[in-house]
Length: 112
Length: 113
Image (cartoon, rainbow over the protein chains, first blue to last red):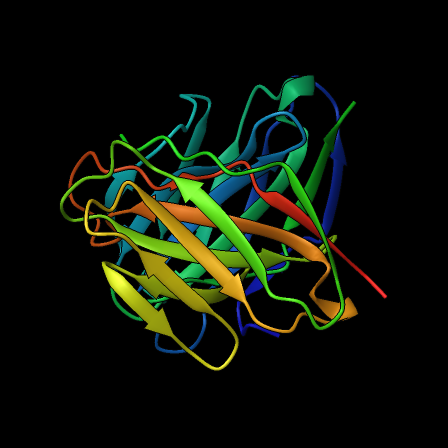
């Protein structure tokens, strides 16, 4: 158990819908990262937050957005969902920006 | 942006040493190299991280040549439980503006009895 929690574990929804994935970092970790893992694209970095501020952006679609709240938990919002958005979404956290990342168990999103 | 490539799969036997090489020709000055292990339906787990030369911990060694265009993860005396997918990650995790963290495609290691 890495100490990073993600909810929900599974999510099934329809095309065009909007969902919110939640991540609680390890106690004391200030940085949160979001990744998408699909069969054809592998592990893709989406976005990074540090102490509530966005620090780096990867291959995140405009339909996706994220934020980190004052209590340091983070949410990833996915809207206008498409079949191709079906994937595992991982959150990771680290104490500081350059420290080891600890990954959560992931949220499996299925878009029908 | 560093593009990382790894072999798709490798087979080994219990007790042998496994070496997995990751190529990252466009690695930037501030980029670190990190290796992760992933089991099915679980999140990646940190193995080791380095910047240059050699790093060793209780589970693995990481060799990085002077030009840093590749890195090799070495797993000594593997066991059946080391069967997993191994990913290398290259990037500047300090969050420098515009930086992207790039994972390799993963190497599926199968350890046979």
